[in-house]
Image (cartoon, rainbow, N blue to C red; front, side, top):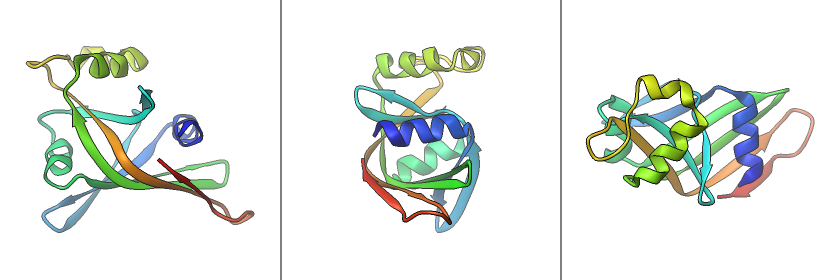
Length: 131
């Protein structure tokens, strides 16, 4: 799990793919966080991406770093825990101007319930990591 987190953190930007009624939707993301041994991503509660992950929690993320790339496929779940939301915003303090936590807040944090990460390259065999 740490290797997946470190790869995504160092990459800076990853691309998140969701399903929107059968239409793939891909967009750049930058929030990745480890909290209580779970891999988390963050968005706004009212955004289409949050609604898509709630409707179909199967997602995939992809990033590239130094000639290697990672694909993480799996299922995510929304975590309504204020502590998880606060931990994410503590890791990304620049987001505090846009996002608030708690029941009335606009922060949505999702964690991988299960998944598989594959780190690939043209110079080595793929490495598969189960989340």
